[in-house]
Image (cartoon, rainbow, N blue to C red; front, side, top):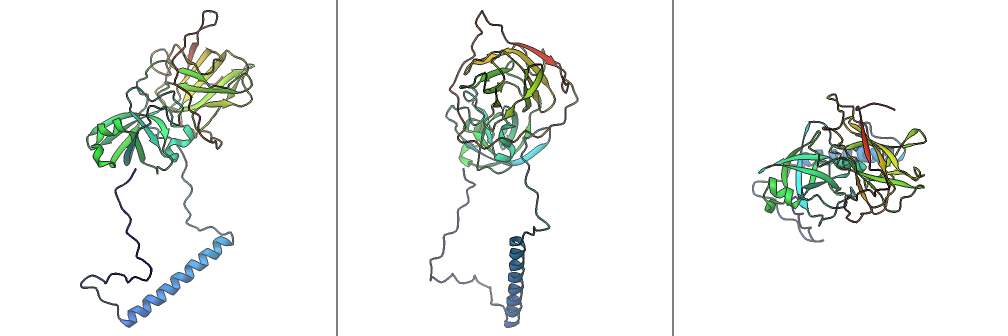
Length: 324
């Protein structure tokens, strides 16, 4: 990725700097003395600030750190877009594979928000038009407002020869869903270590909880988009409650301990078969993920039908914002 700018070549040691352009004159002696005095004053100020920082004092105008949060709501954002190719992989959000339409985006750390944006959608508008993309990956070097689109998505909004273009983008609220909720228990999981990937939820998720011994246990989202209960949640089958950033909530039952298999429920996160509300819940900040090494990339898998001896997953929809 590049913005097209090139650094100025350095001047070799001992070489003379190029002469000033036509019409530029040296400052009079008095002006030079004033400039020198101003330079000494500025140097003194820099030394004072340095000593104050070393002594523990913080600058009074220090800006607060940027809070990581996914794009939510109907507000428009401005920025720039570049493009890349995941080569079919599902990105840092741990999808088994890239979406079949190849329209996806990677966000910088502040908007990726430790996985809180995974599974949401953005409408991105460039010189040629607008494209809807799935948030699937993280772009570690991207600043806020920098979208790294798939090559196919970039070609929908601009000429790829441009490489970098200005864009506007906004979160898609309640996008059309590809199907009911899916659940994928991670390889290596057991009754002693629980990890699940939730799919086809449309809006970014706010929480995932597992029912155990009559109460709900909150899972922690990792930056690679799996929801973990490190001490485990028992042998299953599991009842899992999912809440998104706008308050839609669904509760799925009959999710089996079947690592590596995609289990599809029978109802959607919202819309047909789910109870929704027109009053969005106040988005909350996603839990911070603990630092991890390389994000595991699960191998591609296809939905597996339950065996006749085991119950099929059944989903109950609850009113958004309702508590147990």
